[in-house]
Image 1 (cartoon, rainbow, N blue to C red):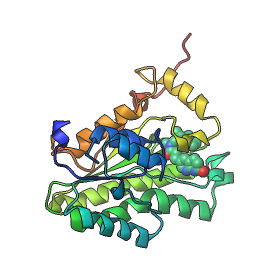
Image 2: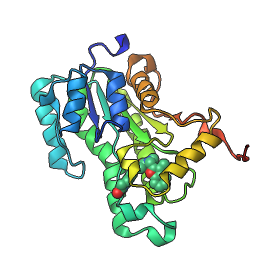
Image 3: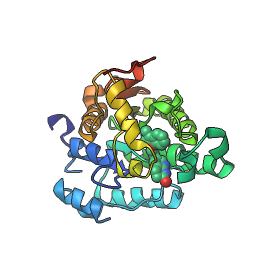
Length: 252
Ligand code: 0WE
């Protein structure tokens, strides 16, 4: 892809072949453990540039950029595709399921990690038309059953994205989010009633289908490229239009 030529990208959040981060890695094709190594090999990517990273640890985050700095003199693109809440937070009613610890963990892993990664990446990204991208979900602003405290964490993440955009804009770094429709990933596999949710998206979205990780990847490639040089602080929906619907009637 010509508009990605010469760009160096770090993609955080590749858990499996079905991860949204995988779709993004494939679309960026940025001549970018075991499952991830297979992906890296498939993309012709140097497996020495794969790093494990627990984003709840500042030391591990700093270690990633220290290691990356040994191979790369700069970084153009940082993709944050990370989100987690303890399983039991994503079940049942909001009031009954939310806990102080569930709140703290979900916000730490899903929202603070964007700020932490951007902070640590900054020395490598400054002064080269850099781009930061995160993945969010519409439950940041509209209630989705069972998403619970993750909705609060995504609201925090979207706000974090805007504050970073305002702060890093003068340094030439754009910061944006993709709000993706539900996709069947490894993370989603553990969620009760997820198939029902995908079925709903197929009925309720204007395009009458769910979106693919390829479609999310293509939008990510656009937003991270110089084609999107005028866009920052923006949330772009890649959801087959689902978010525009205020009411949906059953169809036969
Ligand atoms: O952001 C997400 C899910 C992220 C996620 C997934 C898990 C499953 C395993 C965060 N934490 C965990 N924790 C686990 O233990 N999505 C946008 C997908 C998703 O998850 C839902 C959804 C949708 C959509 C959970 C409940 C309701 C809807």
